[in-house]
Length: 95
Figure 1 (cartoon, rainbow, N blue to C red):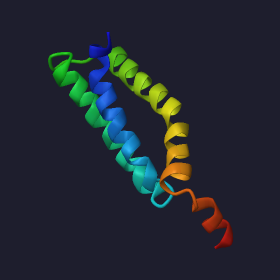
Figure 2: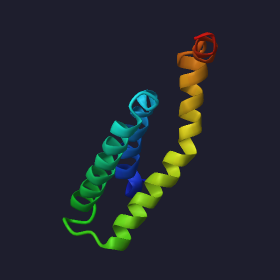
Figure 3: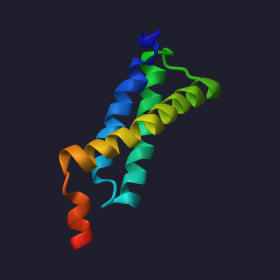
Figure 4: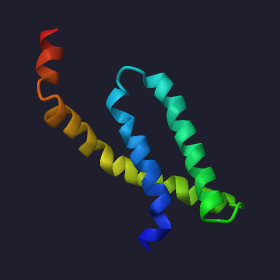
């Protein structure tokens, strides 16, 4: 079953990898995130559905990605805030 979602997981990792710069370039990243979703849907269409994807299949792919991203985003933010740059909040408060 996990094999069916390998493409979504690949694109989720690409999406999550862009979260660390989100606070600086919010509007730019909106465009980047849309591009990531479009590329993910094209990848799913070409790699899994043999070049043809229905609206329902595309919707489910996007929904699965969105749910997983929503679940892992707090963890990623925690890692960025407390593991990668633990002094971030202190520095921002002082600034």
